[in-house]
Amino acid sequence: MCRRGPLRDIDAPARLLPRVPANHNILRFSDVTVRYGDLTALRNVTLEVPCGSSTAVLGANGAGKSTLLRSIVGLRRLAGGEILIGDSHPQHARPRIAYVPQRHSVDWDFPITVRGVVEQGRYPSLGLLRRFGRPDVDRVDRAMEELGILDLAGRQIRRLSGGQQQRVFLARAVAQGGDIFLLDEPFAGLDIFAVEELARELGEWEAQGRTVLAAMHDLEIARRSFRRGILLATELIADGPIAEVLEAQNIQRAYHSGGGPSPGSAPQLAAEDLRK
Amino acid sequence: MSAHDFLIEPFHYEFMRRGLVSAMLLGMSGGLLGCVLVLRRLALMGDALSHSLLPGVAAAWLLFGTSTASLFIGGLIAGLLTALGSALLSRMTRIKEDAAFGSLFILFFAAGVALINKLPTQVSLSDFLFGNVLGVSAADVRLSLAVSGLTVASFAAFHRSVLLETFDPIFHRATGGCGGVVHMGFLALTVLNLVAAMQTMGIVLALGLFLLPAVSAYLWCDRFISMLLLSAAIAVAGSLAGILLSFHGGLTSGPAIVLCLGAVFIASALMSPRHGVIRVLRDNRGRSAGG
Image (cartoon, rainbow over the protein chains, first blue to last red):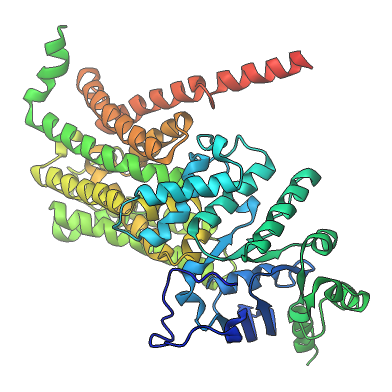
């Protein structure tokens, strides 16, 4: 079952009928294209992510994994196509989505404690004026407890292990109260024990009906710990159950298509332009 | 010299009272802004920005005379032109933002010095560059009050947005925050404070009032809010100490304040219990002795 986010559906305000499996696919990309200047990062991607699944977003460097996640939260404008979450456009479904950035993009020397980071999860729903109240404190406590970092609450974030640091940001995502989690390279830089623990944690999330999309480059972790996969090489190579996605011919196409980018991707197009 | 002679006597002079009030007010707001500059690694950009105010101020002086309002607007325009120009250059050409800023500010600064050479002779370049507490007018104090009040109020009202935009701008934008607006507002406040601090601190030294308290506080605090408060407190105390030093030591006010804040900074860098040099050296020795 999908847990509904706190926001009412703005696109269908007068809907009286109960929700039926029409909403079964929580996340839909139709013909999505994203460009950075001349460079195409995602081309004509059409896919559906079922509700309450854990999905590994895979592909070589520059294949569009992070771009896919960022386009869902509106950090990248679409050059074409449409993304729907349930029946809503992403900006209307924001309270349902929690985005967890890559670990190396964080300034770990920032003067902030574990609790300070997790509290940020409540800020979006508080807006400018409402004060940080008892319910928010409770939610923050529960999120830290769920991730097993409550006893680290007062620690500055540099003084944590890699796995603990990742958990702080997962706890912030949980404190947001959404049900869709977008994780950018959550396993990067973790030791094998931390990877195992995190994979187990995400498995439990899936069991609780949370929808997880995680960009990653390690196919083994994806195979072991994720139910579904999305394989990208600027274009969509495959999506579906992880075992099917990771079949040899797909991997061949995603990683070794002529030793370069997939046919028609930006560098090759540039080369064709030169030849003209 | 009695305590009265040392602490009270200087402020029998009106210009000393004005200088003190102005420096303390701008120390309070500059201490807050400095924290964001330090944490977002914009310290050098702030330095460049302050230098680039000079031609605007000089041109305003040349055209409209010495009124506080015209100097303020002139400086503001020059600062915004630099910020905007470098943003455009870095976006439209292959030049990176630091190089764009560096090139523009040095150009602006040179134009400012050239303009000041054209000013009536009683105006000294060094007053522009390093400040002169004797020149602080009642209008300057009112300007400091307005700018400082606006800055403190903005930080109080938008403290969550400020924290998110400083710590994790991607998260801020991903959750629907107006990151661009917060960032532009921050730059605008920085320019406002720099221009307002010009009379007491001078264009070259004004940033010291923002930066030194913030880096000092950064070495002591593990919470954002405590860093903000400590930084503002250090800036206010340093302004008082600096104004006293300038009176008794016969120094220009800008350098005197920066020297006092610099002493706090050096002491913090050495002695901070967790991040200071002494602690780090001792830890390293302990580690190599231990194995």
